[in-house]
Length: 224
Image (cartoon, rainbow, N blue to C red):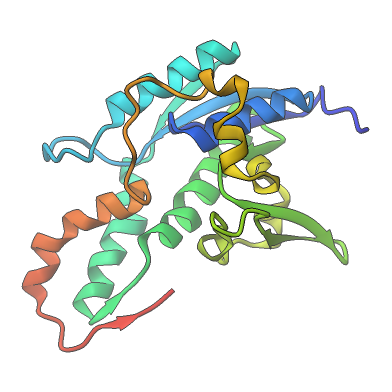
């Protein structure tokens, strides 16, 4: 077994189960683990799905139980410029892009990856996505998660080999129902945690409706 004790991993912590289990598994594998909470949306619109403060509290509670440090960073400007505005532009043009894919491409595996490496000295980042990573002919590639009901490889299809090589996906090798019922589940189950939207990106993008609806596109074409 390789020695991971000198490898630093920054886990994107949302306060939810998957990222929390990822941090726990990486600790069990010997990595030096720290968490990072990303705030990708400002809360001045009063919408109920903007729960950054509650999510941060949940993420902090999990990190306290695990005994790891939690960093915070605000990517709201990057999200607005590179995800939300593009969503609006595409909608105006009669197309509907997938905000989850945009967020993964521009925020979780670009802004987050750069911040973790440059500011926090990370060797890897990790997320709770249900995918697996494998080296094929010298290049890191994505594989579907073992839990077919949870597979998220489609949402990460834009990642480069270099981005994949710097990323770890611990829960991709597991079935969620098994670790949800684990005796360790008290670590990653904040008592007041609500069932989240499909993703933060989807929830945020839904606020475009009131603006984008006024654009009255001539046709709608679904894009990945």
